[in-house]
Length: 114
Image (cartoon, rainbow, N blue to C red):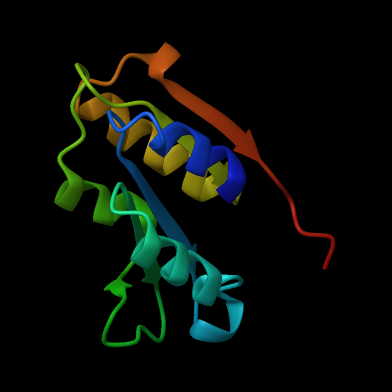
């Protein structure tokens, strides 16, 4: 994912924000890589969204609730939602509430094998 984002950012006219939802830091995979990438790429922002045990640098709560901080706007934003079906559905409804047209919201749901 990061090499593709790097190519998009090379054009200089894009911003990418990654909201990564997890319950705790132990479930927040690749956060060090995302944070390091953000340090080297000014157009990339990473926010860990931890619902149970947020660190000082994380957003507290679920991804769909953190969306309000970003102020999604239909004239400039495209959203890609991937993850737990409940989160994807809730974030999809929230984004529609901000006026994003359905074609600008891409969705991929996954189910854990645990």
